[in-house]
Length: 163
Ligand SMILES: [Fe+2]
Image (tube, rainbow, N blue to C red; front, top):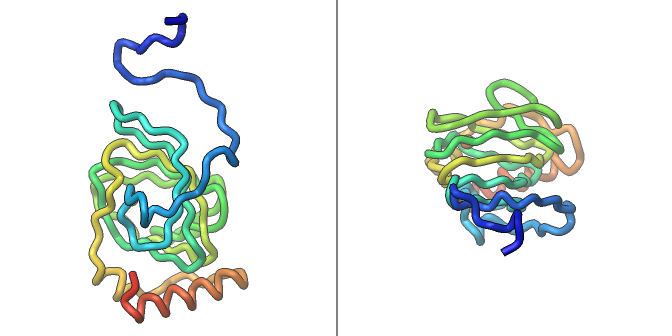
């Protein structure tokens, strides 16, 4: 075995990686089911460490999406990279940050859609109540045409119970 390719004492890969964004495809989390959030979220898993149970990924929320108040056993560090994330009374933009763990947090509104880079440490399964999402009154207005259409689409889905 070549130097630098040995398994480390702690058993996980320390292999250096440099990845172009286009090398990793977006996939629907509705299929993979890492997050178990209401349908519509896309994920791009960049790195997964099964020993540390750490996932580095991007998440993409469509315009109008609402992420219900939730909790999870993992912690997460989130950096907004595109669009808007509206949570805790704040209209977060690229460069802004969110931390969450096992204390209930949210709801999050994404009136114009959003992309984030996120690190989860532990099980990323979200625990949430459908009734919380059904009764949620939107607080944030979209600022783009895409957002306006997205919010209408979201409300129609919600009225039809397709969440
Ligand atoms: Fe969370």
